[in-house]
Length: 248
Ligand code: ACO
Image (cartoon, rainbow, N blue to C red; front, side, top):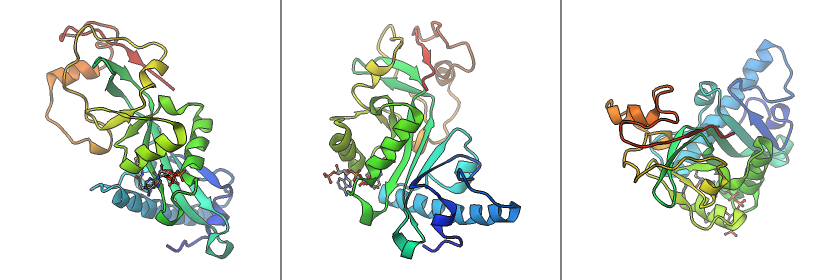
């Protein structure tokens, strides 16, 4: 797709970190220049986001400029090839991450309330796949967020993502959760303090992330979600003890 403004004029580095401001680090200009730049940037984000959803067979687009603007805790990394398009540059990949409040089941079917950094969307354009660009993006993000691969939760990993993790990070088999997130088998060991439920966990898990859909109100869910401080470090009406781990 064509940009109004050349990529290399907007994105200075190979990987650019964006937040809800939609202003790339190092970008300078007056109000009009910022608006033109943001229009251009929004088009490329929307285009890549659509491509990513199609590649993953999703019926809704996970990444748009509008969604990023409305998600102050999300970070979007854009990868560019500065030589492409006759030296104008081209954006060839995206990675979106953000913390989510999740209830995850460990290998003993015990539940823990966590807020891990989650991979929410990840995409490299088809003709650039299998050239190490995906690893470049993930490595950059891990360094930038000072985390490690086993501490991440993945929102609806695709088969390619699973192969990617196995090949590049030795993650043999992801533990798939009922809420469609998945974590490495080392995930639970990596949590420094994790409370274990006193008995088998309930089947209900909150709907969050790309497969979330609005659900009717549930009293059990209210208890599990906490609804404020009542659920934290207390025995719930279900008879479970559970912890809340804020994990950054
Ligand atoms: N088929 C099978 N495995 C693949 C493919 C593919 N087409 N592409 C990448 N992989 C895996 C393989 O393990 C590959 O190693 P190999 O070539 O030796 O077999 C490895 O990834 C290559 O690593 P990179 O080159 O660093 O990864 P790449 O730049 O291809 O990016 C990504 C990986 C983002 C998963 C890319 O393949 C892609 O965009 N796929 C389509 C969209 C997608 O599935 N995104 C992840 C969804 S999960 C989420 O977003 C939370």
